[in-house]
Length: 523
Image (cartoon, rainbow, N blue to C red):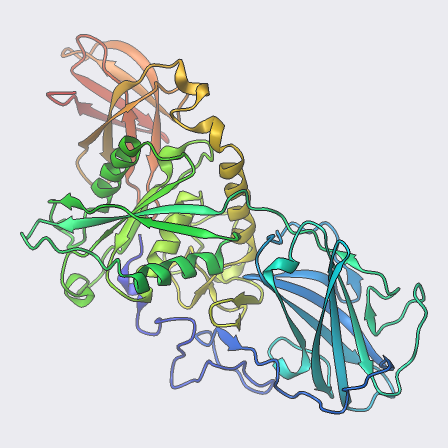
């Protein structure tokens, strides 16, 4: 859930600054543009040097201090002169990358044109990329002209990728392979393995247009090709995947009106979408995302604090029933940001601690919910500043931290790697008969409500306890059930199996709280 107050007053996109700032370039070293200026467009031709067309040798008195690879987040390869070992941040196969090389002038160095040469090898094939710079000072990310910048094509990123860098200049030295030199990386002239990993198939998302029938308008959300591409590219830019595939479902009628708070009832909507997902019998790796337009324009809907979307906070990678979310379907970047956030909940990501987001992740490592390091937005070919906020919080501008990037990767490969075995129609569950379950929703401040019915195999375990009671309050049976929390709120959906004979109510014990609810008239 993304309350609208977290989208204003200075929060339109990563490329929109406050107070008249122009965020299209990185701030100069002497300028502090503030937190809203999160993106820097990199121009590889900035401050180039024309005198290094013929660069015979390694430049003298210029040291390579750092080398980093970017695919949404920064992956250090060389840090402060030491090769980075034990990397946990994934490098994605088949996805283009940016390699940035940072240098430091040593004693005796004079400002001059330098050619950076990056060689990318896969097997017997090699690609040489060059970037020419007038180097006069040590490199910094916020000083784009001081950093060598290389765009690596997607076909060069694979499990056998190796990289090497040289800094060349007229009058440079010829250094034998195996002899360490500060103007190349690795310093001995070899190449560094940078194995890129396969994502197992990317991400598949089914967008479900919800037809708004509550006011008899039959209004549909924006599913134009332009808006779908905006959503697809937003998710692909931040998530550690090679490919995001989106298909649009046939529209589904939705007759529930607004809640007393003025927001759409996303809780009931995603329960209904879970029923639809089960009925459609899609592969277990597919995500369902409902889109709705309760009013003609966003400003009509959101005239104060309002809910922009909601999704299951899916704790289990082997449970496809948690891959359901919904959000507003107006046009523009706001809907795309909500989409990326809610699908994050479906990947098990809790909130980053910013903007009073409910249930913040206690292990989030960066203060204030920021991303904590430089990022790269492939859509805009621009750097993202470390003071941007993680997309799982409520603050703007948003990007993704390496913490959540790595966690998303772990969930994605778990889902894609076990797709066949966890399908509800798969062999592992084929022998277990399906039973009619009802969805019971409750939170800490509202009445309980029975929602949709789902035909599912009985749970082998669960995180909630059920106590079935007769009309006199006597205990008939205990059982377990799966309780699915919704991101952004304290709403919970419990999958309740069929009741025993004679039961008139059920007590649900979940996270230390007990809720007693009368059974519905029909199951």
